[in-house]
Length: 221
Image 1 (spheres, rainbow, N blue to C red):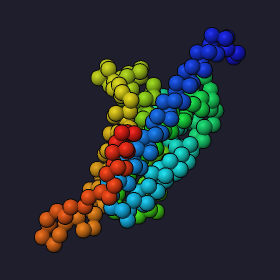
Image 2 (image 1 turned 30 degrees about the vertical axis):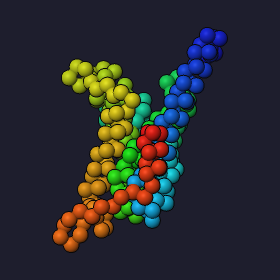
Image 3 (image 1 turned 45 degrees about the vertical axis):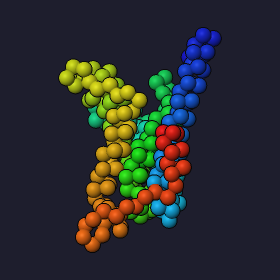
């Protein structure tokens, strides 16, 4: 359907605002990379930087193929979406490419949060699989619960939980909680870094190698 001039202007303004917000969220990935790289020992700095690149690359593939569909699939299923795989039928009256880009930035931020929790003790190949699975399945399912109108936790659902549902502000629950819980379990399963404790169980200081990166990354975040 053809839009009027006023509708066209409104749509353009909304799209620019959404894209600018997506760029700001993506900058968080740079913040995570700098913060984590500065917090680890110099020999592991390149590895942690690569893991953040992997989040963006591998997370893009999985979120494009499955993630967006699981999160925002137009369905009455309160647990998971079931259509829009590989952006089929996008754009439509509900979603366009700018919305996908905005949600993708959040998806890779989840993996970025987790990467620092398991720094210096994860094989690169294993992290590839982890990042693909987290961005393509784990996070999108939670996003569907809260941000999809059909999600069982959504405040806009026809039958919201406890008659009110959950309202997430700026991803503090959907994004940061998922990343934190995944990081917690990753750290718990992998255990401490090699050399973190001496033979008597006493902690050994393992300071980061670059305070400048830590400060810059913190400010970007």
